[in-house]
Length: 137
Image (cartoon, rainbow, N blue to C red; front, side):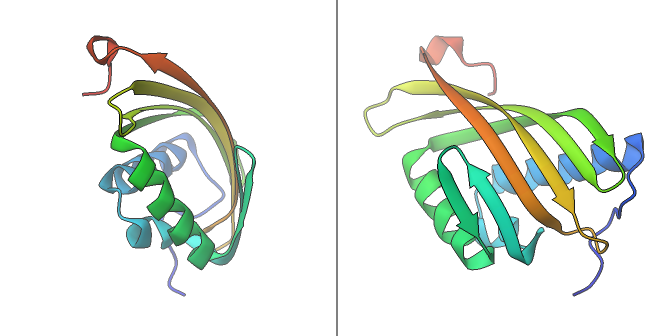
């Protein structure tokens, strides 16, 4: 696999760049594109679901974005060190009935030496909101 820049060890600039790349990819809502940022054997915990490998990532994201309609995400740096980055995020979406949600959480990321994410642990809470309360347009 080709290196996926920027590579660890991270600086403030490269950590911010890695976060922006992730935000852009996730906002594309393209599961295949998103999956390319992860190792072939990536390990995830997303809420109460455990996901292993790129193929499971793709299937998870297809299910996610089928449920979370008009998804829009914003990530921000929490901290970084060597080959790890922690982010705070929020995203907004609505379900099939039109109920809007703002989902908040934290992610802990660990990267391999080629810059691919090998571990992603996400803790997420959902808050019902009115469409008029949306912040991420």
